[in-house]
Amino acid sequence: MQRRQFIKSMGLSAISASATMTGCHTLSTSIAEVSGATADTMTSPQQIKNVGHFSNIVVGSGYGGAVCALRLSEQGHQVLILEMGMRWDRTPEHDTFCKMISADERSSWFKNWPNAPIPIPRHIKKYPGVLDLIEYDEMKVYAGRAYGGGSIVNGAIAIKPRRSHFEETFPWIDSDEMYDTFFPKAMTALKVSQIPEDFFNSTEYYEYTRAAERQADKAGLKTEFFSNSYDFEYMKKEATGEVYASALDGEVIYGNNAGKFSLDLTYLKDAEATGNVSVKTLRKVNNIEQITNGQIKLEVQVLNKEGGIDVIEHYTCDKLFLNAGSTGTSELLLKSQAAGTLNNLNEHVGQHWGPNGNIMTGRNFVHAAGEAQSCIPVKGINMWDGDRDGSNYKIFAEIAPLPMGLETWTTLYLAITDNPERGNYYYDKATQAVKLNWKRSQNEYSVNAAKELLEKLGKANGGRTSSLLFNKGFGDDFCYHPLGGCVLGKATDEFGRVKGHPNIYVQDSALIPGSAGVNPYVFITGLAERNMNYILQQDFG
Image (cartoon, rainbow, N blue to C red; front, side, top):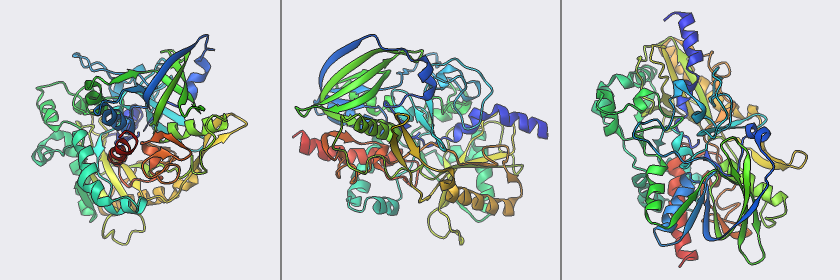
């Protein structure tokens, strides 16, 4: 491949490169955040509407919120879900979501350019698209903005946390119960499966993974399969042309029109089927207030599709399940505390934040990766467990696609490292905004871990670091898996009740202090299943 063609393909593949946003969770959902891009379009509200009282309100429809909604509703409890993003029901024409290489306004939350790790020279109109980019001083956070939260925009990689890592994070939780009951329960509900090995070994769509695997094997590194919430039987039919091609035709980080089991097709669908759930979308919670009778009051902005505010709604509820993602949950608690409407929060709110050790990198000019590539990753290089050949770093590098439709001779990785660094959210009085205290230098561990991985691969295989991508080849200023800010057992009790405000419950990624060691959504879902099991027994009878 000529250098000019390669560079051109890299520029046009900005969205495809971001197909490595496979965990995500990330890619997280938040109903408490509005991107700064919408601020200039917001109008002054002309109307305040008292909507009424509800027994249970769930804020956010990502993994934690979806578990809360289903487990409450299946026991007969009435639930209202408030979601900041839009609802994206699939159409028979398979045109609900846009593809990565032809991103339009459906891709991004009120931005004039598609949200992706590499700038994309494609102008789009501002619209409530599915993927947001929250920009702090030295860290950018990707977040899902849709009914179904991060499940709409992630690559659906489903891995249980390593038991040793889980026990180190929450030593007081019964790990036998988690691994025998709640993680299996979560994976069943999420419709998790693993790619059939015969299909993996034979299809052209995973040559990029097999090529990376051969490189790893030559370097003496271990690779392994992981599970996913994609329907691999459907994918096999995609490969033969029997059905609409979704994952095999460039669909993942801006939604899948077919094949992926996102939350709106699993937990949320089952919750709505009980008849006990109502849903309101384009609702941004602006403030939480603990009122004197023990109830909770919410101030909610009703957004329009231009990014303005049509109405301010007031709700009250008996119990609030706050699941707006690490960023959204933390911001809303801190903002309400600063406003004097939540006065009993403790010093741990906003603390213990981390990017799950996220780092992106890649290698060029090594082996052919194949022109046709599936967008669903299924295998990774494991330098975390066991003998790491003298390495000082723990890293799990998911082998990620670059589906350009031409040969790029490139292998990409989304790596998760055991970065011990932590940051925190805080309320800045001068700007009246919640900010993130995190320095780019705190990602040094992750960068060094990625460099060591690439050095081992390069020594055995040749090639070079993909210096055209990211920051000289290493994406260290953004993350897909923000974690922490309302940590279980610190800002909450052992089941997620917010300390000082026991009728406010948190069951999302904010509970996990900075690192899950893997893509975090099975961790989040299993933990929420465990917590809701006890909350329903203890608080609902």
